[in-house]
Length: 161
Ligand SMILES: CC(C)(COP(=O)(O)OP(=O)(O)OC[C@H]1O[C@@H](n2cnc3c(N)ncnc32)[C@H](O)[C@@H]1OP(=O)(O)O)[C@@H](O)C(=O)NCCC(=O)NCCS
Image (tube, rainbow, N blue to C red):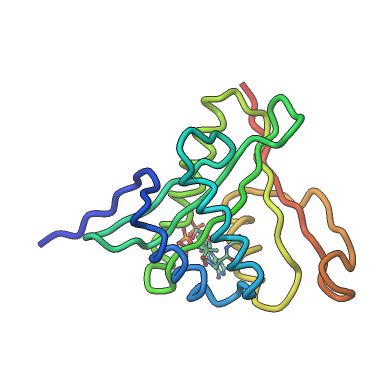
């Protein structure tokens, strides 16, 4: 049978799979996993509009997800809060599909930019390479932000109409 990868909306039943995915990702600390799960719970609250989710599923298995939302007090700046792909699904373009889905939604909402924050610590080199491959540029670097030797790196992409 042919495998079928689909992108779909977040469902309450995804919570355990997404929590496992965050744990298995390999580079998230327990604190980051906890925040990731809080954001998933916020995304599952009926009627909320702050957190948008897209989930990648193949043959009933959740292989990845992304979460994005409009930056508070901005009229067109959006944040990519989270993107994660199960290690077993990596290198197949799923991360790219998820981020391109977010970009499309931001463009449709007449958003001007999509920003993403990441860390300079070991284990995040692949993440930086991923965003660069998707044409995100480093816009700012906050030295010693997370810990004395872990910088916050803000990357982004600007859209034109
Ligand atoms: C970063 C991550 C989402 C990439 O997902 P993925 O599905 O493997 O990525 P894709 O297959 O869509 O790759 C897209 C592009 O990025 C590049 N890329 C992805 N991971 C890479 C890596 N580790 N090193 C170098 N390049 C990489 C690919 O070569 C590809 O380039 P191309 O399209 O020009 O050929 C995934 O590795 C992950 O979940 N990492 C852990 C969680 C994380 O760090 N999330 C982001 C911070 S919130």
